[in-house]
Image 1 (cartoon, rainbow, N blue to C red):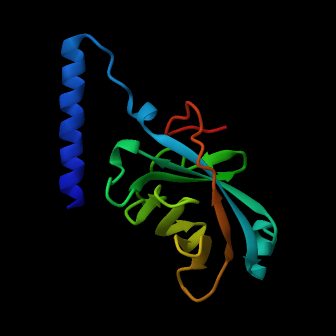
Image 2: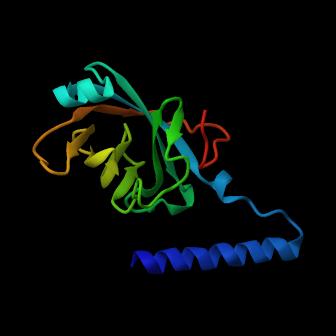
Length: 175
């Protein structure tokens, strides 16, 4: 079903681009269609190994960005799949552009109908070591587990999403 939606969207985008080209108007770029939101996670759990290895501490605020296409919002659920989920590391947001291996978005959505916004994400990735990133839409927490022991917690904290879109921010934006 995801493949069908993807190809249907590509067909619609191609048809729209052809219509714009024939009309002489400039087609909007994909970067300008996406919306980017700031997100903060205040850590209240940090494992000893993470504190030592990554200089992470309780009370630290991690900064992230959520990217989505407003045209993809489901009108009945008000949920939208994410295009990218970025973490501020050494002054730059990573991944800079969508990366289905480095940060898969196949189990990630944002509930725009909830106030405050609710985010769901589960991604098994390798960022130095194999981890599971879990963002829970009910508890409003981000938790990172080692893939070798899903009961263990490397870091965890509550998240807050600023509902104000970052003006003019393209999908590949970095500060």
